[in-house]
Image (cartoon, rainbow, N blue to C red; front, side, top):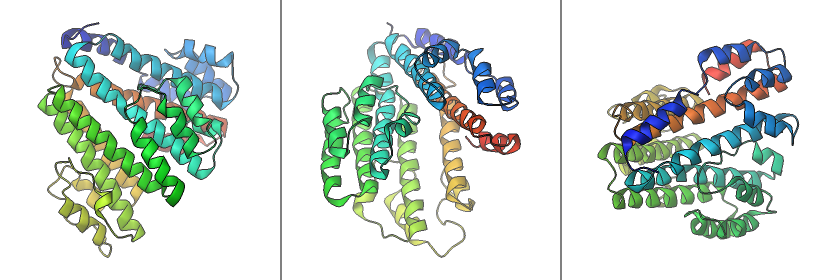
Length: 338
């Protein structure tokens, strides 16, 4: 283990070299069916994970298991060769996957979806090991999920226990997710302060809070719901409470007022929520690339993990496209937006 960014980032650049090249996606798009797609994937760095998954499962579950195993091993390897302040920051960075996985399970329970549906969306990489996630996902209801997480190491376990208890009364999934977001960002900002994180990383985190608040405001604007103090998360930089409220209340305009001076200006003219989400994601990706320019700082890890997430999403999309015989042109278009 090392706290030296030169060493850590050299190792991460080695992992980055294993990301799939554009040529792979062209070959995968040309695969005749799902079996041919798996054969193509088997010739990539995912080969060993795919082989192990095929010994236990069938169909799309093979792909989901292989991707989850690979992502978990990659993320935990970074945590494993990092120590000191760098290690603390990486652990904080990986907490986002605990948040994402807990929200995935909560959404599935709310919708009454089964275990197999949940597994296909999990990205194990944080402190929640695949076996713990499996146990939580198998819970009969939100209370059972909370019970499974209470014995886990994630710092989010107490927050979820509280929100799950409230959910039992109000059945408000949106409120549950926002409370988890609020708890996550509070833990993250406090941890970054304690670890004396670089200013660029803190700004990146605050922009993620901005992105979360902007998504919330856009959803409220689309639904016609009124805003409240419970829905805005403090700690951002550009999406202020006043701007948040103005977006929510600006339902009659074809464009969104007030975003022009922010990093998210292009969202103002996005014709749909899906396209607005693409813009928001691209803003965060661009920021991750920018902070990765310093070879002796944490930004290299931030950018790599976002690239790895994108690769996982594309492979899941490709696999499902081939499994359900989606036409190549349509799949290629969807792949470009993944």
